[in-house]
Length: 445
Image (cartoon, helix red, strand yellow):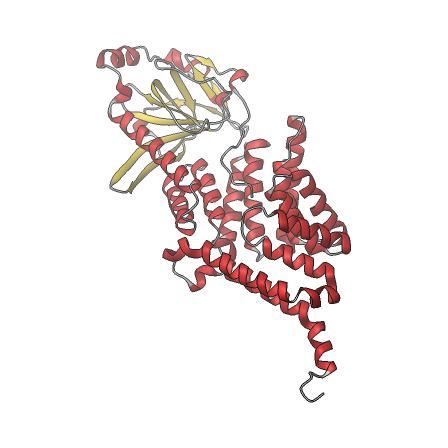
């Protein structure tokens, strides 16, 4: 018996094998989530391959310890194996299989339900994903289930617009609940930001909701783990684009590209946005490519009668305050909300974009000053055409002025949240122009 290991030591090794495996799996996740703390962003391209190597090393060690581990806790071993297989972003059938075994062996293992839900999410099987996360929450209220459920609820197919709205509302509630359990968790803040953004488009067009999305993204940016995910910066860039903070949006897309050079999404978004801005600037320079005679004819036709009900009449703003409107030239506008003012111009062009939202056009006043107008909540196929007169009450002006890659982007922009506040060719825009918006650009989180 001289060379034999003591029985107590053998038993101790068996008891601790699961904790050793768990430590190894957590180490791989730590490497993934904190990669840029130890590596320069220029090494982002190597992250995937290096993570794959570490994952394979951990799997090899896990397989060697499998016989000891299953004696100690078979369900926990299956869960840890599935969790390790889920460390990379793509769907893994093997992960789904071992995690399914784990929850059958131990239906009370909340972490295993969450991981299995993650597998179904990656498979775009959102119905089963929801079942997993809701099942986990029945056993324990936890942030992972809540934020994952928030994400899944927005992806579910629905039979009606009402059901979609209900899911968006519930998604926002779950996102808030997840954050309330841990206000330092950036991943929960990131998903809450997405929930606010979805709510802005699908439920309520309140600009305050968009501000809340941006606030949530800012909180996510404070957390090392979420800050190093390209998805946060991509989604933040989308929201910034709709806030019409174009320079910041481009910065977010650039950061997302640096964090994951293999992902084309941020690059495509940046290119589309720059093309859109290039068109705006070039069309302004050539005055919509209209001939001087056409411009003179359009501007001569701009009379007070084109103001329609805004001509010396009372105006009730969307917030309910009443005012008498004063017709002013474009050059007299100030940045921000121009209370008790109305502007009038002729449409000289529309600006094509890869996105259907917003509908963008340019108007010119009698001084031949040009403003860009972004119109939201416009019904598909509707809009204004060249030569239309457009009056905008209490316009909100933003002066865009920044330089990017040797190109200067400078123009005045008026954002219009609803076509119902426009007067087109002397008549108040009808409700047939108003419509909801479908998002197509967000990542699945």
